[in-house]
Amino acid sequence: MNQTLKKEIDTLVQLQKIELEMNQLRQAVEKVENEKKDLAVRLTAFESALDAEKQALEQIQQQCTDLEKEIQVVNDRIIKSNETLRMVKTNKEYQVLLREVDDNKKRKNSLEDHVLTLYEQREAAEVQVNESQAQFLQLKEQVQAEQAKIDEQTLGDKERLSELEEQQQSIGKSLDPVLLTRFRRIAKMNQGQAVARVSNETCMGCFMNVPPQLCIEVQRGNQMISCPQCSRILYHIDE
Ligand SMILES: [Zn+2]
Image 1 (spheres, rainbow, N blue to C red):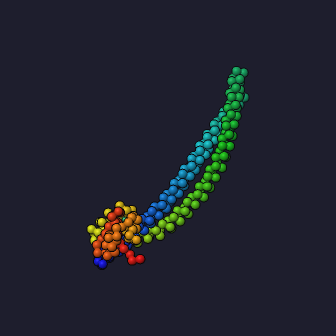
Image 2: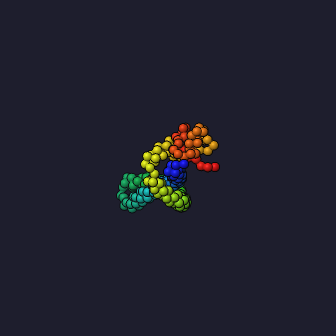
Image 3: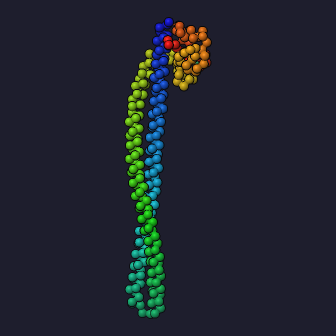
């Protein structure tokens, strides 16, 4: 058996193991990061809805203030007209002013009806905003707790990933560049798997039969043998 070849294949097997674990970790990290993003999106959506409710309440509040001012103006007019009424000299003037007072009173009544309806709407809107505000705070707390949990979980995965990255780099440097390029090319065709064990004359990468003569060559270990089906570099372990 060629010891250099054996060592090279052992290194490739190790490299593959490292890279497969890295892929799994990256997928796991990506998945939880997406969950984290989804949580943030949910919270933002809730906050937007709450802001819309607050805006609606402000609008009603503004309408109430405007109406209250208008009622005040009309009321002042009534008072003024009543004062003037006492000083008029002709019946005609008196009639005109009286009608003016009457019109303003009607106007005031209608404005007061309107403002009462708005007060009810305002009250309902306030209840709604307070409820939503409480729900939002609850959701925010929940989301922050979940995000913190996710961060804690991924921290371990990320640490392991950087550990593996270091190992991957140092192995990469120790390998013959031509062999590494070959490994990369085959890995790319086979979802990251460039080396496969032969067991019972079967390639454990593609699960196709390997011709007996090739199996013997793999076992002898004097040259690098590729699977005729999937091109993976084959290796043998005594069972
Ligand atoms: Zn194969």
